[in-house]
Image (cartoon, rainbow, N blue to C red):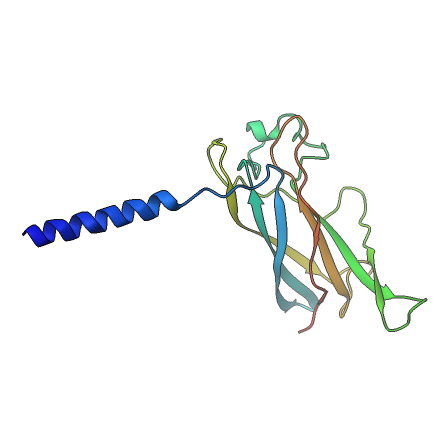
Length: 191
């Protein structure tokens, strides 16, 4: 019995010691991101090539204020995140398409693909934490995109593209912008 008590107390002391050693990470309040990967799934739907793409971004944020609600009645649609604002979308994507470099044949140059006004791939990602507690957060954001070759002015079979991404947090009155990251090149519609 005495042995069991000593053994139990030793285990409890060890657990408490190890638990107290864990420090919360110290990240800056401005989000820091990294490009983890692009997951690509090709399929053909009645002669139209489709790519389902998932952009996976790693993040670290010191104050945990990442993500916006999709409920347009929530505070996340108040200033500065209201509709039409530059901060309405918090996951900003630019598509860079490879084109031949006239000065260096064989090496492509990547140029931003310009979409019609009001059309882009940027969007809102949901709140990472449901409370407003200030705490460091780390994890991944996975954003889904559906791309087709219906209008070859934008995407054609075999196009090579990269994605340039940054995010905003919920800091007001001006949200903090993360660093900008770029994916590895991928080839569209390869099936």
